[in-house]
Image 1 (tube, rainbow, N blue to C red):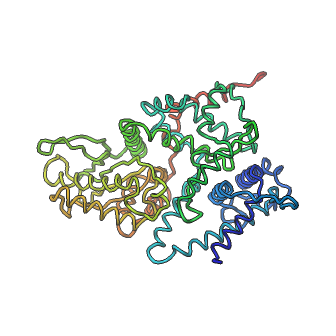
Image 2 (spheres, one colour):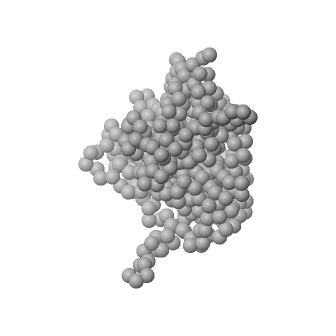
Length: 518
C-alpha cells in the first residue's frame, strides 16, 4: 500500500464513524476557539488544551482555516460505516479538541504524500500557485469593508441588481444583510433556527427563505453535490469546495436548524459569491459588471493618488474604425506612464487548482488584455492616437480575481501567447511596442495603496513588471520602496458604504439611537 493510500484510508476511518451534525459542530467550535470566541466555543468541548485557544497561525495548536474547509468537504464525501447487526462501531468523539487535531495531522500527512507526486521539476512553481489560491483569501479575511463595498459596487447596482432580484426574489441589499446577520449569530451560536426572526431588521420570513435557498442545502443534497463536484481533481487539498456555493447545512428531520462549519464563508458568498448568481445572465449583464469594475478601479486610484492624472477609456480612429484605449491611463509630465486594462473575469476551478493550462476558462481574457495594451502602444508610435508614452511606460493587467499572483511561469506563458496573437493579428506591433506588463489583483492594489504614496507606488509597479520581481505580489514589491515614515491611509470608501448597501446606514442610525431611559 502506498503512503498516500495509507493516510487516505486512515482519514476515511475517522470520518466514516463521525456523526454528521456533531462533526460540523466540532469544526465550528474549533474555528470559534481559534478566532477569539473561546467563550462561545468552550461549551462544545468536553476537553481542550487552554493553549489551543489561539489565533496565532505559527502556534503548534493552530489549525488552518483551509484545512477545516477541506475536512468539511471530505466529511460530506465519506460514506458512513454500516453498524453490524450484532456489534457496535465506536463513534468518533466530536467533543475533544484532540480529535480534530489528530484528524488534521492525518490530513496534513495525506496532503504531503500527494505533494510528493507534483513537487518535482517545473511543477514546483505551479504548486506555489495552487497553494496561494488556497490560502491567500483566508489570510486576508472576509469580514472587512473593502469586501462588502467593492462587490456591492460591482454587482449590487443597475442591471445586475435587477437580474438578481428577478431571479431570486430578494434584493442584493437584503441578501447581504441576512448573510452578515447569520455570520454574527454564528460567532456566538453553533446553530441558528431555520425560521430565525429578522423582523427587527425589516426582513420577513420570505426574505429569509429566499436567502437560505442560496446559502444552504439539506445535508443529503449537499452531500450529493459534494460527491459530484469533488470527482474533479486528484489532490485532496485542491478539490472543489461546495461551501463556496452553499456555506450552510440544514439539519433536522423538519429542516429546523442551520449550521455553518466556517461562518466566514457566508460573507464570501454574499459578497464575491454573487458572481455565481449573475454570470449566467446576458452578455450585456457581464458587460455591465465589467464596466463597474473598471469604474471602481479608476475611482480607487483617483481617490488614493489624487495628485496623479488618471483618465478613463476614450476612443480614437484607426483608418475607418473606432478603437478604444485601454481602460485607465496615467499621464505624467513626459507622457503616458501607465496603461491599465481591467478584467473582471472570475477564476474557475481549473484556473485556480488545475495544471495551469492557458485553455482554462478566463485566461483568454488575460491574454487579450496584454495584446490590447501592446496594440495601443503601437498605435501611439504610429500616430493613430495623439498620446505619447514615456520611455519607461509599462502596461498593467488589473484583475478582480487573483489570476497570476505568485505565478511567474504562467505570466511568461501569457506573454508568449499574447506575442503570438500580436504577430498574427497586427504585424506592425513591433518588439518596442511590447512593453513590460505587471499583473496584480484589485485586493493587492488596495493593500498596496493604503501604505503607498505616488512615488513609491510607481516605483513598485514598474519594478513588478521586471524579471526580478516577476510573480511577486505588488504589496510585497512595494515593501522594497516603502517610506517608513508614511502614515497608512484608511479605506477611501468607508463613508460611502450606505450608497451601495442602504442597510449599512440604517444600522448605523439604529445603533446611534439612545436606549429607553437614556
